[in-house]
Image 1 (tube, rainbow, N blue to C red):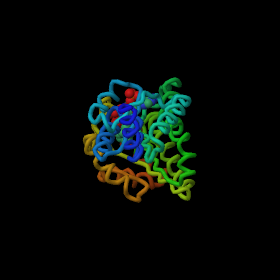
Image 2: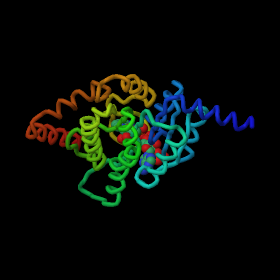
Image 3: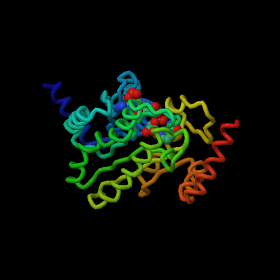
Image 4: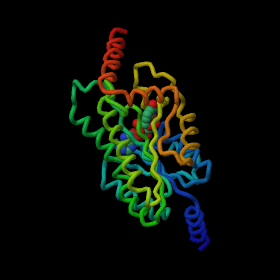
Amino acid sequence: MEVRLNIFLMNMTQKNKKNIWITGGGTGIGRELAKLFSDRNYNVIVSGRRLSKLNEIKNYNKQNIFAIKLDVSDSKACKKASSVILKKFGFLDIIILNAAAYSPGSLTKLNTNEIKKIIETNVLGPINCFAPILEIMKRKKRGHLIFVSSPAGFRGLPGAGIYGVTKSALTFLAETLKLEYDHFKIKVQVIHPGFIKTPMTDKNTFAMPFIISAQKAANIIIKQIFSERFEIYFPRKLIIPMKIMKILPTSIYFFLMKKFVKRMLNG
Ligand SMILES: NC(=O)c1ccc[n+]([C@@H]2O[C@H](COP(=O)([O-])OP(=O)(O)OC[C@H]3O[C@@H](n4cnc5c(N)ncnc54)[C@H](OP(=O)(O)O)[C@@H]3O)[C@@H](O)[C@H]2O)c1
């Protein structure tokens, strides 16, 4: 009887708190965000394919962090995970669509299997995760979707590979949802981080200007997601020049990029 009462009280306290789901929450930016939200007493659901990584972050705050093993490219599994989350927590106040696969490099050597996997993870993955929850958000007229995209998708970028293509699509998706869901009172935001030191960028062999730690990035993000701005970007000294490149006429952009690539190739 006492055990049942404790479980009931535990469920009640969980239900009275705000709930956030962070995909790819076992490492990097997602992991640091999970820590910050658990410190703020949110119920934090972290998902990813490696349970070992998720359990590590769960140990940071066992009371507030919950782990779900999930491959975001598996739409059936995402539907099931969403229903498990909703059953346990009642509602999701925020979803951070952060999980992504990264495989930079030239598109001169196309590997279609790899391309398929990256598109399924980076574009279909976020859709698989938010789609089952969006209907409930619409009905309740509240909710908050945050897409972790990348400035690598701002314009055609040599070496950004299919990763840049998917991030371009993700930003497009976020902008479209923002326009279509505003009147349902669902907040949509997109994040364009510069270089952040995480397992993802540890693979890079090139110089990464203005790189910052995942902890610092998470601190910047958490401050800005409660603001009314749609786009969150940092560090400004890297992203503002990239934004200027974005509005240049195509012919000037191509001219500058070709010069830049030539300089890079010549060391
Ligand atoms: N680091 C940067 O400089 C940078 C810059 C711009 C944007 N971003 C974006 O920031 C986000 C977080 O990246 P990060 O830098 O923190 O790298 P990260 O530590 O490698 O995080 C990526 C996460 O995604 C998960 N993931 C990958 N494929 C998955 C799949 N199929 N299903 C479920 N989870 C999957 C990984 O966990 P499992 O392998 O365990 O599944 C991992 O936890 C990404 O969207 C990335 O594109 C990063």
